[in-house]
Length: 245
Image (cartoon, rainbow, N blue to C red):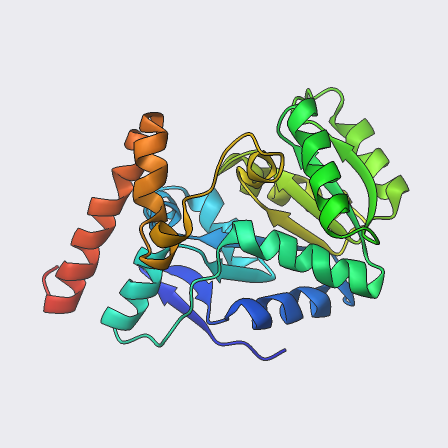
């Protein structure tokens, strides 16, 4: 598919809505090499300003979804185009729905063993025909990583969902995607926890008002250090908009 890609402070993001994102993923599944699907938000934009390795991963990705509302607003304010927010937590189930319809298989890697199993059970309850060909918790040592790669390849999964947190999951993809026979690898952060019922998503009203980030901050105060990236991002957008260097 021909999707427009723009850059926000040097960080690429694709101009897709949810339906287009799922279609792009399906086109990647029909491709001939493993491609990453990564969520882009203000936090990741700030991180990529100093993390060259992360920026390389983003540039090499097959699909970069506009996950944060701050990013969507920045693209509009800076006159780069128009975006719809595509939350990674919603894209994963949408991919699973398409996979269940078309017979694609998936593998879940990350979180603890209880959450990983709970996420698999929740997906099968919602999509009974989904082919989940394997799962593994995120506590794999470097010494055991070759065995995990072998296990994923032996499963013949089309899609790998990886929940290691950012930027760890993105750096894992950079290192190991070339060794995998999968076609798509989506970094999903804490989505397994949501699916397994261990963490609640923001109520609909918060999501409707684009305040999911605020709900998560209030419910998980430990995220405050990560959220300091948001005011930095806002300042960068304002300065860029008014022409201040």
